Image (tube, rainbow, N blue to C red):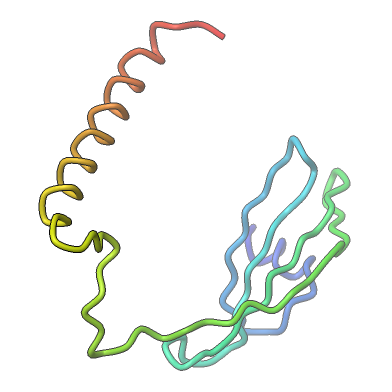
Length: 112
């Protein structure tokens, strides 16, 4: 089924494709890479398609996304608070996880 849908987008053969489809908004967002070794690619294409039931997709916009390969010698971190990051980041992550847990526990009880 997905191969048929990909053909409806008119993408190059053997492309690596990621599709996010929103039936409520009647659109599909697609990121696709040309064929080849994924680790050596430097760009991808982002396209938005409007969806008309039952199975018509029309491209509404397209853009190129550049990809930066991670440096093998990179020592940066996503939590880089000079001097106190070693305590701030684990505590922040723990609090965020706790709030997510509370939300998931309460969301089953609450009604919209």
